[in-house]
Image 1: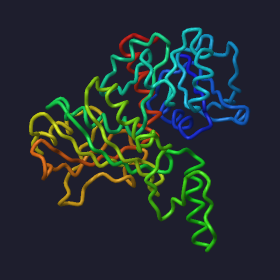
Image 2: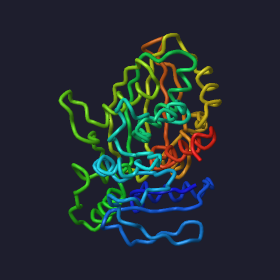
Image 3: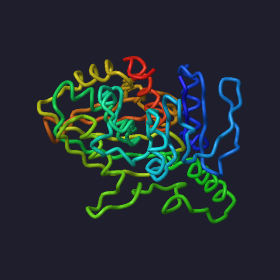
Length: 336
């Protein structure tokens, strides 16, 4: 298998290298691509050093079977044809193609078969907050159709990239020294703060991040489900958390929900609040599954259920999900 990573120097690009190594993904040849700034950097993979090539409009992708792309929407749009013109399957981590009718939007635990129909040779990786949520929702949907969801997300700094993580660390250091904290990546100081603003605001008062959760969930689950989200940036380094309320067509008991989550692919049930055992970013970072806990009946609606999820958004929310898509294609013989 000939594999390329586009955006190899970024946080997700680096996570691709780790995930591909840890999962022993079948790679015969690996090529790393990046911007002119990243070109020339070297990274080790399985004991061998690889140099980042500058991404250009040429024939560099000829013969490459699959390209994991995480270099921003603008780059994905500009280079999609260059990447796919010789048959390379492009798994794109940006938002550029997610809502295009001829591009499948895939979470392998939920809708893997959608990846088989890709007329443009592109498969879109959903937004990290959406991936985490639909993996959990899918377990409940199998019990009873979900009519609507209210969700509040608590999103780690790393969701905004490596520079955002560095800024958060720097802010704490500056505050401890009595200095004014640097604020460049976020709208406000994130250290010791919460910012109810992820991505840009739209005309309806929701942010683009919140609208992604509405639109992407419906596409992935092939459902008329309604999702109302509030997305909040929190001073956590890694792993997103979500407080989720669902309304189903019939009442779902806590016991039913626990059993469904316990048996769901990609989910770990962690729900013993009496023992102070529930998911937290501190312990979920660098892990693959979506962890679910705090499962309760809604006190105001007999068909309501509420729960708490935590997942590493760089792994399951980005690199891991993309690699799992590729593994599925190989497993069903849809990729060499």
